Length: 178
Image 1 (cartoon, one colour):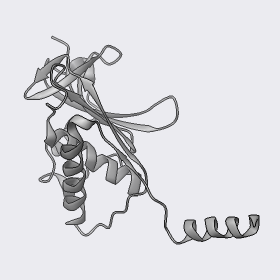
Image 2 (cartoon, rainbow, N blue to C red):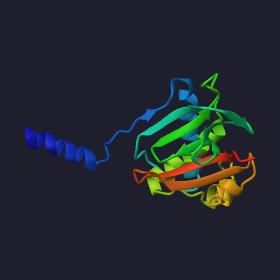
Image 3 (cartoon, helix red, strand yellow):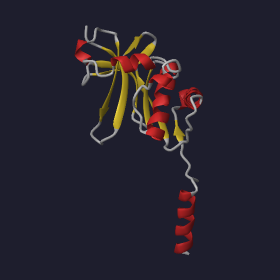
Image 4 (spheres, rainbow, N blue to C red):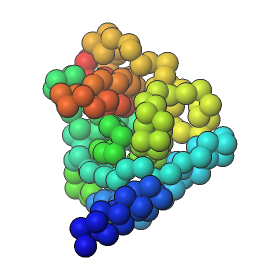
């Protein structure tokens, strides 16, 4: 019996029968699914094939400020307001603290693009091929690597770092320095 179960598990893994789940907050479930599908369709329109290779988790972070229509939480470590971040399978999106359903869907679509690219191709960069497809895509590439402390208040910034678990995290935000 053990051999049969082991064989079935091996066959299912080899044939790609793996199933992944999406876990989205109730308030934004339909919006998050739409953003995920939109990002997938846009990337696939360039001829790239995509498959779900990982679960996809979205969590909301209550915003401390609304900057240019984007709800952002403050991160003292970076002295930055962050509107969204992605580390592959996990996305955080800023939301209105009084109405968690109020998020910026173009920002979530941008982060969903990172989900697809990071989980399928281990690509956390802003490739030029997607410049006209996702909000702030080109801008994020242009400012990545800028010194956060030298950027004027409210200016869009973007950076990538490796966290304490060795996972690449992509962050999109706004400078908090005045």
